[in-house]
Picture: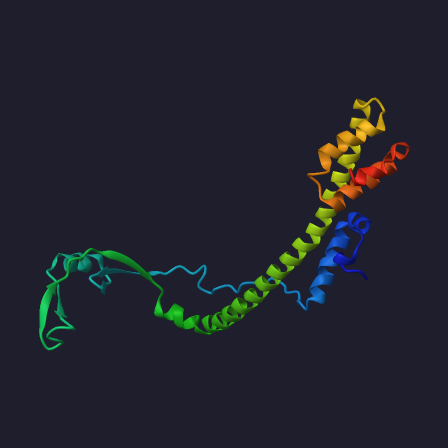
Length: 225
């Protein structure tokens, strides 16, 4: 039972999607991360219930009829004001209410609200639990995503490395053709192209792969060219 960072390059390349998912689950277990299922959000009992009572608001006061609201909107209304930081509450004056526009408001009936009391209480409890479970689920998804990224990055890195090696072998073959089969010239082309721009470890793998692909043109000195 190897973890993803214990696998060889070839083992990483041979991984199937199911095996990758297994390695992700394995890392979750090693890191003590408990899988969490996405919780189901409870349904608000008022979600599809439309308010049936209509009222009209003018200056903070509600009226049942539009006619009364229009009348109120046409009156001169005042509020008692005072300077809290000045003379204080005992010295008030009248301040005219400037906004007396009519606003329509919708309400549930008292009977409807009372009938749904038990349902609303249970919904509130279920919603609180849902919010807690959702946070746990989001934490799990975050941890799972980080682990999945690490595993897939390791697989990608090996694939990218293998591709670069294959391209280096192909390029050497092209240099060999340009050099009309002269291995010394071909190695000289390759060294100039890759030696200074490639890490030593990767360059060594390029050489090993080329020596395997072209056994008749092995160039040990290419390591040090």
